[in-house]
Image 1 (tube, rainbow, N blue to C red):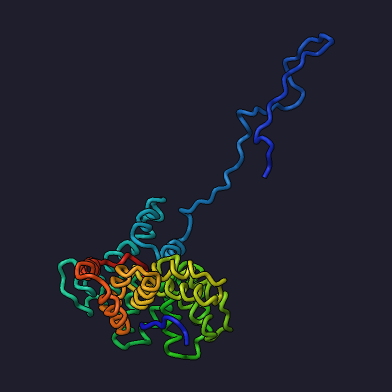
Image 2 (image 1 turned 60 degrees about the horizontal axis):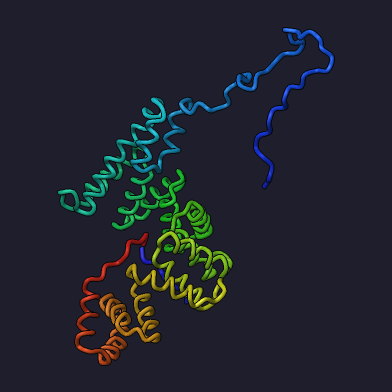
Length: 336
């Protein structure tokens, strides 16, 4: 799915000491029996246990809770008790089908790419309750043009609380420009609150453009920043623009430059171009050429002209060094 980047106390001690026993003035024989019940500080009366017995949860409830679990989380949950281990068996099986589905889809793990086998594996995983498999099955259906089936699996995953399913369902509704756009915003908000960075970015775009919801630059900037902090490159670029233009944030060229560089270092071509221009204006010709060369290779035509102007001002040795740096450059990891 193509996405737009930018729209047209207390100080007291915790414990107090026990008082010393004072010897009475008048000597009276001590009694060995107490008239009131004695409670020891070291052997308090046991209280009834209030902890919940999670093993008593119905199988379907456990399965629903764990529907969006990854394999490490499933393994950990299966160690809680025997009841959970038995309840989660179908989901552990689903992870095997999910793994093979991804192998067939991308042609990895010694197998040839086969979309039909990939879909079959994802559907088997989905039938065992995995929302991860549901989302992957929905994606294949969407890519081959069977959008109704794709929406079916997205919705099923979304209703089970899967943020990726919620996000994909929302974006599908927005792209179709259907009557479900208000519902799309609701799903985006749920996924965003759950920490899904792509949903946070899409929600920010809607708030920025005033699409479906009322325009709010402050809210848009806040969600751009959340997504950027989560590693979403497009959001890094838009966060930089918000700081640069003073939209939703107090204008800060320092913050704008920081986020522009982060986006550029993760492969955002427009950010590479603009960061290169910024370095050029600061007089750092060598680094400027590197970023402009990267932007040119990524298809930013305007970057080539500026790069060539700078190259004419550099020595042959500096030009060769800049090109070598560009050749050896690798993008930093990101959530994309």
